[in-house]
Image (tube, rainbow, N blue to C red):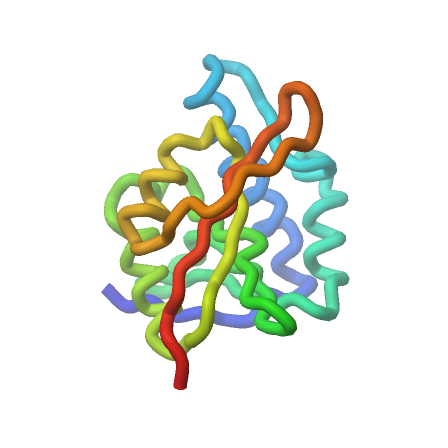
Length: 157
C-alpha cells in the first residue's frame, strides 16, 4: 500500500465537499439512525469546504492510497498542533486505512497533537484511542452538542 499526501488545492473543492458530506453523514447515521444527517455548520452546502480552502493558517492535504484520493487531512502546526479534519471516505473506512495513514503522517511530526470529535462518534473515539490518543477534555456547545478533546504526544526533536 502506497500512501502519499498531496496539497489540497482549489480544483479539489468538489472532492473536499464529497469527503465532508459523506464522512459527517456516515458518522451521524451510525450514531442516531438511518437518514439522520448532522455535521458542523456549512459541511453540506459547500461553505465549510470554501472556509477550509481559504484558511491560510491550515495545512490542507489530500490523502492518496495507491494513487486514489481517499480522504483529507487539515491541520495546524502553529502555535499548537491541531488536527482540524481527518476524514476518510466511508467506502474506504473500517479497513485499517485510517491507522495506516495516521502512522505515515506522524512519522515526521513531533509535539503534542490535539483534536476534537463529537461525543456521538464512538467509532472515532475508538480509532483515536487505538492510535495512541488520550481523551483529555469535554466541550459543550449547547444542550445537545458536546465533543471530546483527544491528544497525543509524539515527542520532541
